[in-house]
Structure formats: C-alpha cells, structure tokens
Length: 401
Image (cartoon, rainbow, N blue to C red):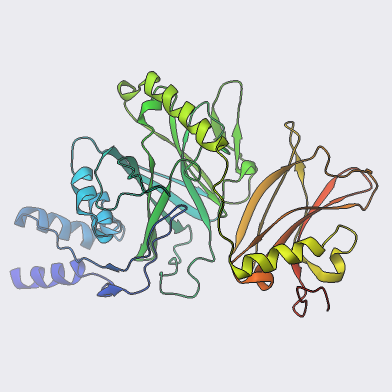
C-alpha cells in the first residue's frame, strides 16, 4: 500500500512540463538605457516534511484544483530567474510587501505579486545618460496571463511582443500621464514561465510619497492610455474606467505611510521639474536621420498624399480634453503601438473642413522606409481625425516616386 501511495505522489507532484534549460531569447525590455542580456533558467525543488508531502498528496488525489498552488513562482523565485541575487535577498527580507491580488479585464488576468524598495538592492542598477548610478529604487512584480488559460507566448516565439502591455507605478495626486516609469527612470525585465508572463518593474523609489497613495497600473498598449483610467484632479485619486474594453488593472500598493517623507518628496518633484525643462543635448545625427529630415522638409499638409499613404487601421476620431489636448492611440499589426497628445490650439490655421496638419513623426532608425507620420484632419462637424501616414515604398528623398 505504501509503495502504491508513493507512486501516486510521485506522479501527482511531477511537473506537467519541464522548463527549457536556457531561455535563449529572453528579452530585457527597458524604457530607458539597459543592455540586452540572456538569462539562464534556474530549476527549483521544494523541500517538505513527510507529513506535509502526504497532505499535499491527499489534496491532489481529492481535488483537481489543489495543484494550482504550484502554478506561480514566488517573488524570490521570479527575480532568481533573472539572475538578480541581491533582489532575491530583498524579497526574502522583512521589507518586502506581498499583495497577491488578481484583477481581470480585456480577456487577461493581472496579478500584483509584491514589491520591495531600497538602496542597492539589485545586481543590475540603472545608469543615467550621464553615467550616474541610480541606487534608490522600487521593484514590483506582476504577472499577466490569458483569462481562458491559453498560454502566453514564450519569449522565443514569433508571437511574443505582439500583445503589448504598459505597467507602471503611479502616485496619488500626480498626473499619471506625466509621472510614470517612462519619466521616472523606469524600466522592466520579463520572461514567460508555464504560460504566464512575469514582469519585474523598477523605477525611482517613490516610497517618500506613501502618504499620497501609490498605485500599480497595467493597461493595453505600449504607453500610458488616458482612456483606461479616470484621474480626478480635484482629489488626486485614480480609478479604472469601467467602460474601457482592454486591460486596465489598477492596484493599490500598501506601502507603510510611515515611510512618507514630504520634504524629500518636494525636493524630488523640484528636481523632476527641472530635468523635464532642461534642453536636450545636441545629438550627432546619423545618415538615416538626415534622410528623414530631408524627406520631412518636402512634406506639407497639401502634398503629403503624393509622398505617403494613410494606414487605415490607425484612423480614428480623437478625444479632445478640457486641457485643449487632442488624444490618440493606435497599435499596428506588427505589434508597434503608440499613444499621445498634441495641443489643438493653432493646429488648423484656417479652420476649414478637410484641412490636414502634420503634427510630428517617428523613425525606427532605417531612414524613410521606417518613418511614421502623425497627421490630424479637421472634420466638417468639428471633430478631429487622426491617421498615421507612411511613405510610399518607392519614394525617394528627392521626392520622385
């Protein structure tokens, strides 16, 4: 009988799917400067007493859901997967916060696992463009999975990256479209294990704002989506937009309010404002950048259709906010996505229906071939349409088609 039970336990506790020895294509994604790195996957074995092992065996034999306790990695295991031993120690310390709250939206389940903050608690500290090491950081772990249980694509899959999510910490009372990981020296590392995407967020330590309330949000797309949340400027509170069709998870991170430091917070905000107002340092342009500049000099709202064509999947009627900004967002079939806003005032000089305005452009570094052009159109009813334009495939910098 004992041998029979041991055999059942061995089968029940055996992993359903062994992980690969190496994650050859694990990607280190960073909003700011980070080097690409390959991670070696670490295997774990759980040690249990004999009594606990029998108890688990009984649960497994009696319930098909009991095994779910093994579905997720622990926060310490997550950071070990990315070879960050210092951060592992931090998540095993008394300073770590564990939440394990799950929210579902847009066909996905997002879980806030936990967070820890402090100085020099990671083996991989970021540096500014000036070489300054950013020592005081907050690290938070989230998971993203499909609600129907379909596995998320592995990092080595061609499908990886086509599902974009923007995750960040936010501070109560500060506009989330301005104060987020994108402007506060943030970034993330992620990998996929057992069909679940694990993401480790990090940015400047904002525990000094604990008395204001700290949020963690995850929305569809590659940038903060204003339409995913409701930000009340009068109260400083942030909440989910229940009418949003995509992912818009929003968690309260329970940081002890005793860690608040209003004086340090004021100094941080002052330095933040100064850095945002600093003029950009001149950058030596590459040949492809010069090619883009030359091409953009050719374009006018009147002749843009001669040199470029609209990407119809991006066409949309924009929202105009009370702040006078025109908001837009899009995601292309190749996974690239963007959202942003431009000032309406002065966009259309003559206010004639059908007038186009070229608001800006972006390039992937391959010259004109990789150019995206933001175009706004004034409609007859006073609304504004956004559509992305891309150069004709046979266009040349000289303008000859």
